[in-house]
Length: 365
Image (cartoon, rainbow, N blue to C red):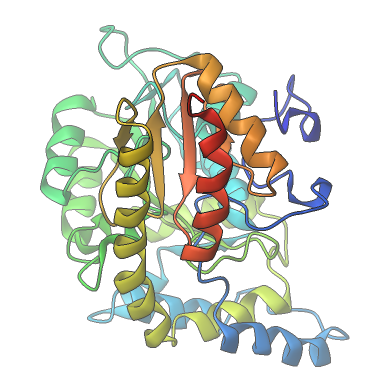
């Protein structure tokens, strides 16, 4: 499988973004869901400033940067959120930490058969049994991705609440990954569970349903090399339990300064909300013209397309020609076990042109 050699398949979960260094004619990485705009320029400059601080330890409490993030996420009451917020070395660290330390014991379930698989990997590594939500078996933990990566399926906040209320038994932990929620637009908070703190508290106090809101900030701000994630816990005491087991200085000075600059860059977010839907629509239209049988999934504002080519051989060939052209794409067979599917990042016109030219090799002569 393309890209699999970068992973220990027996112990790790494959992920996109691993081939670019091995491609001599590399142009753009379509295998990820990162923001094609790249990291905000002012945030990159802050990383350079942070070089002057490498002789010092970073703040063990992440201050003042974590308070800045709390004020950005929940401006109406940042102090309340600050007591429930924790930063981590990428979301992967926090997924592992919450599952091992913060979740109820017992089997685990996933909302979707196809979704970001790091939650399953971490749960299995913790010795948990996987069960289906429709099997009738009880489970202590439920993991769900909204918007779902890779399928692009999205549920509004009221539908999310209804699903949790009707699916989760008392004494259940629910992990909701909202890493791609930022692409929703200027009103992303209103349609996010970050706006539902009273409901989250009520679910915990009345039913012992613990709701953790997870977010990888590496996607929207294109900084996977820095590693930057956060979790919002149901109550402040859950943060205390996680901190007891988190490795100190989990974020370095570069990541913290980068985060501070990103949340202040309103122009960058506005550019994202304008450009991404436009360029995604352009990709959809071009592919529909070239391959009318292909089926594209996902909301029109997302940073990627999930595509069923209807033919495993065609999908494999698409992966091959794209890599050869320097624009690697994600193979649905790798990690998701869906060999007819491919995933493409939304990006600017110049890189799109390279990919389209490569895919034309799939057309009959």
